[in-house]
Amino acid sequence: MSIKPSVTVAVSGLNNIDSPGPGIPVIRALKESNFFNVRIIGLSYETLEPGLYMRDLVDKSYQLPLPSAGIAVLLDRLHYIHQQENIQVIIPNFDSELYNFIKIADQLKSEMGILTVLPTLNQFESRQKSVLNDFGKKNDVKVPFSKTIFSVNELLTIEEEFNYPLVIKGKYYDAAVVANFSQASHYFHKISNQWGLPIVVQEFVTGTEVNVTAIGDGEGNCIGAVPMRKLYITDKGKAWAGVSLDDAQLIAITNQIISKSKWKGGCELEFIRSNDGYYLLEMNPRFPAWVYLAVACGQNHPEALLKMALGYPVKPFQRYDTGKLFIRYSYDQIVDMQQFETISTKGEL
Image 1: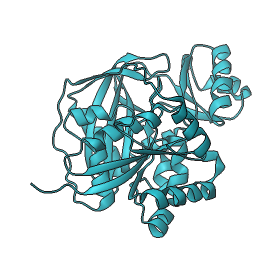
Image 2: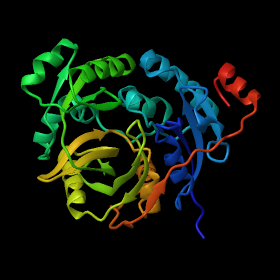
Image 3: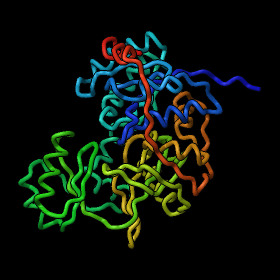
Image 4: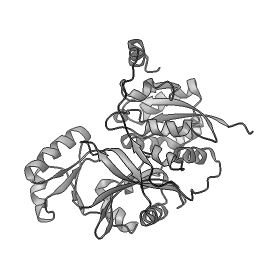
């Protein structure tokens, strides 16, 4: 029996709450790797992120400065963590932190030998919600008409271009379907106060929402893709249960987007299946929080990404199981106050 290579991987996105981050399912996938023996370094931004205290999954945890602190502060902190842990690969899992990690990816590799598998800055910017119309044209995929605005007053001027209901979206997260100007104004302020400007106004398309978790190699090859339909949705619009789908057309569209954009790394494609075809609502530039469903269906996307980072050959997955369900649940994790105080004061646990 061959010995599995040991690797130390740092993973962010540990907020496994009602709007969960992808970190914990990514870690579960890596821990269940048939190829690697993985030691996990958890990276957190808040002291109450549940993943910090999941000792069966996270071997050691460190706090990072908020993305708004800038690149220099992030690099300084990662230098310290790397000195303690000898990190080989970092997998960031939040949209809001990816810009900084993409900017420092070359430095991480040259100065510390830390590897990443991330989209280029151009790829990252090309699928932003504010330019999704252009992304659709370039990649030959339908997208709902959208417009970027910076003030509430612009909601009045766009009524000639949009019909209610329409969708108000934040630049990173959050979205709301609104039926009139009053609701649109309310959510403009609510979302912009949390995530900043601009706000994206998007045409509302009726149909069934279906999502795809996928991974590209940066050369135009789709390494894996698993589609899912939400069965239960929280008040924040997050899937609390979903089922893997047998949908050749959706897989074909995903392969087309990955191929044309030459996407590198994990991603989530959000679609509406309408009467006249599929509309791409968003392309999130990292694994989704439900990526573990892909593992259960026979495609371990985080393991494939780790292989890509370390230079191992990766063949595209040829199949996946359909009719597999994921169902989330709440779990009361008991933590000693001393642990909370340690991460709060020392920034590591």
